[in-house]
Image (cartoon, rainbow, N blue to C red; front, top):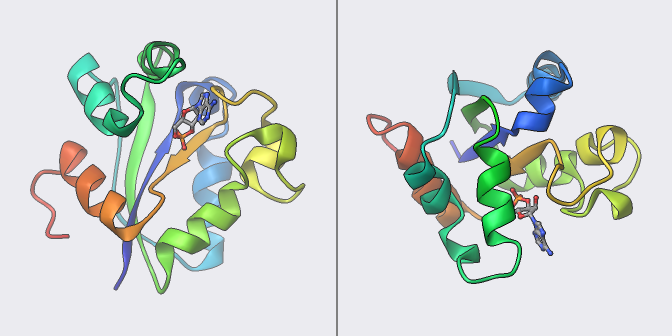
Length: 136
Ligand code: CMP
């Protein structure tokens, strides 16, 4: 079954949205394969966002995800990568549709509540950063 990687960012944890976000994924029918609340190391944060290295928002993004605990998880289900992307809404919450996670709970592009892998290839790269023992 297709797997994807999701992270509830520090703003999502601070706003008390962990249960709400996980509930939406569960209610949709996605399975939780793995889940933990952690503080990222700078190395993990830079590795997760390595494709954005050199962009003007990279430092701000890394510092933000280091600003508090996050919840990382692996979800599985048919078409899980795209299902999760649609449920999250557009990266910039200002454009996100109501009913999506970002459309309902965020307004700032950096503080946009959740990260989700943007492709199956990204999921295969991101999952082992946090869940070394999982077979993707
Ligand atoms: P995320 O899905 O976690 O992937 C990269 C993150 O960079 C993105 O969500 C945003 O929170 C953040 N970001 C900040 N500025 C930008 C930008 N200009 N374009 C894309 N992503 C940005």
